[in-house]
Image (cartoon, rainbow, N blue to C red; front, side):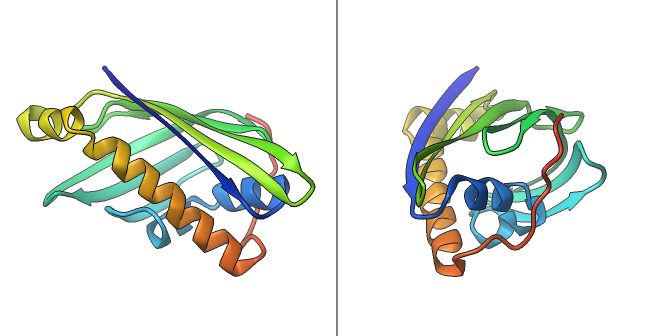
Length: 149
């Protein structure tokens, strides 16, 4: 099992950053390689990704969700094994630290090599930078889900 952990400061309040992160269907707008996410229920999402020419479909279950604090998940079924948590920490009323910690099992030689050479870390860092740009440019979330899981 491999791990990646990246953080970024976004120039929006914690509630705005958290609310946007709960809008999973918007992820393709800032996550490279994510083609589509369908929200099937409050705790189940279906992902379609294409990274390095490899297309994957899998479901992810939200295992813990606390408004303005964190969203945790684990994949179920499909070809991809991963789990993770995104945490949100207010720095001050207008700034938030977003930290993504993910555990994953590289599948096959290509993913193992990509992991070994830091491609996954760079991918996550790039996704967080695009999230920062996305939410700061909007200035407001596109929606919110404030439930506890």
